[in-house]
Amino acid sequence: MNESRDVTTGSSGEISSFSLGGGSSPTREVKAIIPQVKNTIVAEQLDKLLLTISTAIKLVQQSYTDIGNIPPLIAHIDEDGAVLVEWVFPDFRVGFNLEPNPSDSGWHLISNKKFNERTISEQLKDMDDIIPQIVYFISKSI
Image (tube, rainbow, N blue to C red; front, top):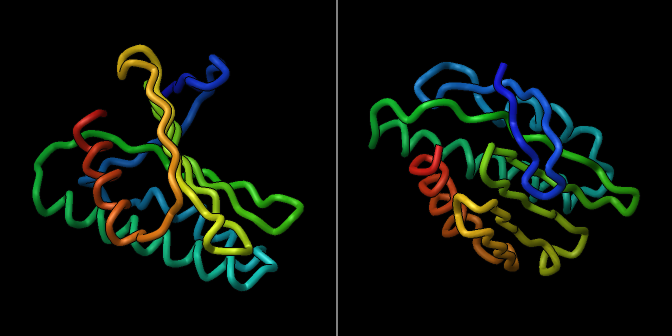
């Protein structure tokens, strides 16, 4: 187990991690909650997000050697049917908010001082474009 530091609140917690070169998938646990998502539009977005992340990870695996460990994604289903999916790393977090209205869905990156305390957030217009860039950033930053 690795200890992570929540860069948005400063709290620490233990997280499991998966090697990008290994067999386990960081999307596995979140994939299991798809049947719990009552809004079919959000469930479809979540399924596509996880597939796109898995594909991007496979591309990184094919392009790079020892990249290190990557923590599992975590997810939270909101009362309004939206889903928040996050990756929490020691120096940054990447999140995806999937909304009942897909045009309201977005992504964010929040970092600590190591990455100049950056905060980026945008609409999640094209997963096939932004997810590989995010996974590439992660592969170079862990």
